[in-house]
Length: 535
Image 1 (tube, rainbow, N blue to C red):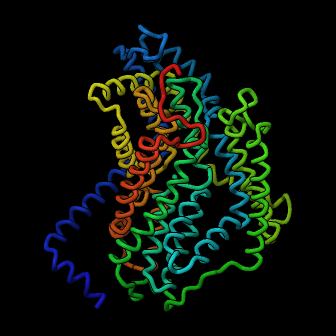
Image 2 (image 1 turned 135 degrees about the vertical axis):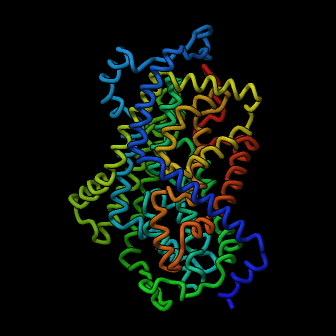
């Protein structure tokens, strides 16, 4: 009876074939456009070369803009040509320092060292399994999505561990395994920027935002904690919306699971084998949790009392304090030390050599990131030195003012633009490195703070991750889905995930507007909402 249902639905909807054809063509177009893009490293190298050539052309034609900063009335900003003798001397002299001084590089590498200890000791995997497998059947959906959001602290952990595990758990409960896969995938990828904790993506994006803001304000610094408050609230929103979409839309659409659809190489007659937490793992998590609480208590003592040593020693406040400036250090410590304690208890780490090995293995996996950063740093530095960023920002801001689009509505269009670009350029760092130098100064000029702009970007960058084949783990998710539906294709998987994208977009944008413009809340500790030139 269940097998005949799709046929009946098709008959009752004569336009279904036409709609499916339109949707398939749309997906094919997205995939085709994405495949036209070269590797991100090559892309940044090409962009850097383009800036060199374009600067020479723009300088020849006298492209310029009036400097909008107070005290610079009458000053005209012109393009500096990299094709000139001065430009060549600048490139040769600064190629190395462009790379070594690039803000996201050091912060991400330091943070990933601590995360690597926690991940390779097995602590993070045990946390995910314990959270999801310990949930009651009534709460399992929301816990799966919530765990997915939390897992993005450790990059690929959610994709590799949680998504397959969620499919298995739903199968064991008699629910459709693809619904479990979709719920976990939505939390891990569409909720990528949300989290209760500050993770490796926060210093990465903050570094790019700082570099972009410095095109207009050389002293402006955006810290890793810049969006923390908003991302904490977003975690619960995404978990709730993800559970609703799964149970009210996706699961009914999938219908009852038919075991005959599964790949016979993976199907085990419904007897799904899942590894529950061993007593030693539970003990390790308990000791790791206790260690984390001790570290948190020590940190509180350094910042909460008025005499706290990590407060700003000049003002006595938290803003501009070593506490906020040292967030990356806390990421390192709060992952590395509990991770090592867990490893000692479970015997996955016995001495300092094991810790060093974990760090080195994690750092070795960052090779591609380091190569990408080298070329991204050159592009951002070239873009800044030529004055392209400032000129485009000034002219773009003038255009927005001319069409009277300077109010909060501008963020809807900005988020939509980011979501569309993300369909073809799935890397959060690559996309922000390209768009931040243009849009951060532009939106600053019409009165919005870089922290707020970054928070808006993160919404657009997240919600379409799950519907683009360009997302780096999309192939892995498709392979896991094929275990339960052997003939599944890209279009089918995207059609399953599309409701999450639509609901998350509407819900997340609504939260953004309520949070920022209705309630006037900051997106992070000490984060400004508005910016005034010369403030």
